Image (cartoon, rainbow over all chains, first blue to last red; front, side, top):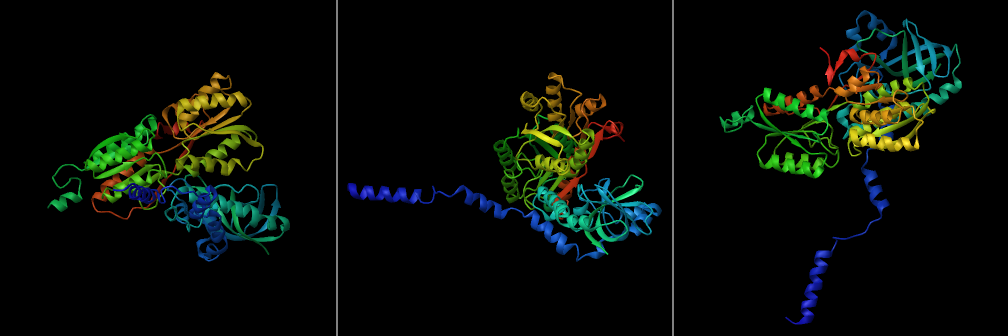
Length: 206
Length: 302
């Protein structure tokens, strides 16, 4: 075989093997592509708060009914609760309305007819998974990783802090009537507490 | 007949079915207990089993999967080393017709494993975060020791803790470093952190082994007792330490429950069940001086 033909064949072989085996892409492009595949917890939380939750008013238990049943028939009351695991911490989605009796740096306190306990709407520390788990509408089995689901909880709490609470805190005054939907966390093995703390998700001053 | 025999505890030749138990590491008593409990449950259900130690090495884990597939194991009970990196191993087994049941650690896939039974680390660390805030009276400097950064448990614990603690601006995290869930490494990392930040009030460690390592470093620096240390797992030495007034708290994972449920899933799979929940979170309990009497190493007293 003549030298030129050999060179051509070698070059063709190198081109064939080398084609697309080395290529350059911007790292930012690769990261953006990965990001596009990432779960968008913020969008999920926004959709849940704005669309899913208002579409399921039946998922919220009237707070007076829950309060009375907790005393009369705790097992029945806890049958309305939800959680991602079968542990002692259980979550309820509740609704009701009550008169604002006091406001401090952490809570707005309500007197709700038919509820013997003090009702405290959390207005500063929005902590835990009551907003995510109370309704039972969000399940771990929807998510690729538990981290995705846990990030939803954080985003929901952020939305409550940054969107639900500021207009309420700016306008709320003792004596006014407040309509609320929110999450409540209770321990299955403990007696009903003296104060029911509600993580507010929908608030309306009437 | 062969087909019927293949659906129960025995394979086509009448021998007990074989279950491979692939565990991330046996260099931590927690995982030793997890693996041994799974093996004991598998035996009680009528299966043969063998434990494989991945030594926190994904390549070694891949070798174990190759071996399990080639050796004709009928199922794999799996504690992964890497949430993302381990997915390929599970898929390989699935393609070979071998169901994989994850225990304690998850993989980043909904459908590769037949089931995934995990501690609800995030919720447990919310409770630990609340306790930490109270123990430090809402202010002070603290250190966080992370586990293996490629493990979802590491971040679920960290995120649960921060979802509470970050609400208190006077609680300042002065250092956050990984010690790979390892006691000796945690001691070294803590010693080095203390050089730069001797004025700390708290340590949150992603597992008990690291909490114990941090405690050793704090003792050597003369800071034991001044600094509140919190772990996660419910390991024997951590519980003893809480009893002695050293560690402030831990979160009890019920790995006996996790291991036994995982082995039971495999048994039910062999008997025909297919509709397993993709992920099953198991609750964890916060254990501190106030309720330590209710708990024993790795579980609750009967």
